[in-house]
Length: 249
Image (cartoon, rainbow, N blue to C red):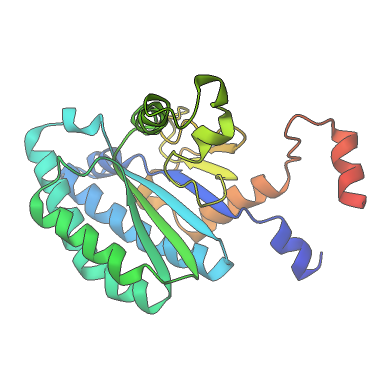
């Protein structure tokens, strides 16, 4: 296989639910916070690996809108970890030409975290080697509803009629509308659910589930997911024969 063929088999956009931090810590008789801290180290490794492989975009589910239901102390520690990680990592990400973006509802975050998010996005806005998207206080249902609110406003002003609404119009208003939709979704930790993550964007995404807990996920396990992706035939509603014909055209 040539280098071009290998490149064509790589996903442009990977989306990951990073599950298993707490269970990783519990298995070692450690506080859950240690698992989250080790999870940040795994993030660093996977961002570097994706960047080196030429992946166009990486979206990580860091904190869902449902995670506020966790114990107050754990949520507070997660917010502190988020702040420290942004402050520590942003310069290195910027040096490597990585654009940082945060998707989700920010109003519930502490003021200092909102400020750091804005600073990180502003600092890296012109970078173009890879997009690193962090989904924080994010939910797929929220994403679709906020897109529909925008479109409903256009209907209310008479700019468009209800019959003008199309899937493409909605796709243009959800988060990450300017990026290719994820080709590969990975969930670590053994659960096999999408859990309200990128519900609109994952319509034709290849799903990959692994029992590996997130702190133990590394470049080797990422390669296993990429090999699985490369072995699949993506048909998008066509037959397998049609896909092969298009490849040969």
